[in-house]
Length: 239
Figure 1 (tube, rainbow, N blue to C red):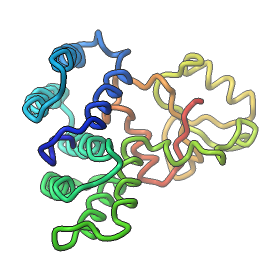
Figure 2 (cartoon, rainbow, N blue to C red; figure 1 turned 30 degrees about the vertical axis):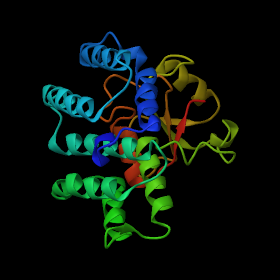
Figure 3 (tube, rainbow, N blue to C red; figure 1 turned 90 degrees about the horizontal axis):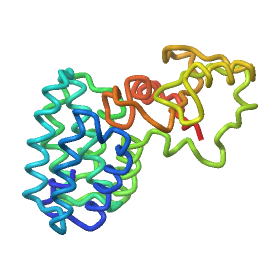
Figure 4 (cartoon, rainbow, N blue to C red; figure 1 turned 60 degrees about the vertical axis):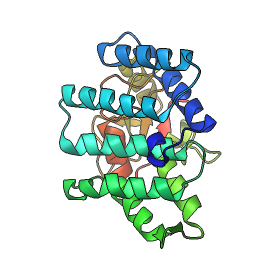
């Protein structure tokens, strides 16, 4: 996403630093160790350039192949990466929109989840005659932020309390800071909350552990959250 408009802003560089901090717990795992080392070297040189972006893309592309993800998962990972770079400075410029279209158009035959297809459709709708239509900026940034963090529109003052969840069906995903998955399950069930294993149309909420998981197919979330996004099911954090 950072490389789409041929510039690296301070906001985008800071977004990379945030990414490193978020994934610090994975620093010693094989898939991330080399990436961290590369970024450490880049930032020690005083900045992040477009050449560094290109090298990073080549580097990560090999990791994607090594992980044996499906073409669909790779496409959705790439779109998510682009949205994070685009949303770093809270605006979408024309080059970024065009880049998203050019990179995303090849994925439309992969039956992407509705959230991803909706973003690509919105870009087509809001980009007219080389400009982004009025109101398009806000809508595109909102969609980008939702793909980056599906909890961003649900963890507000209207977030239900544990007592509100009594009788509701919830699904847990990721690792929890407050305890093991089985401990969290026991605590919720003691409160009358129904904990299911898989996400279905009957699921009321998905609760994501704050520690994430190395197994996540989409970086900061996995297939359960992706399915919840597709079904319009709210995603909450453990906090």
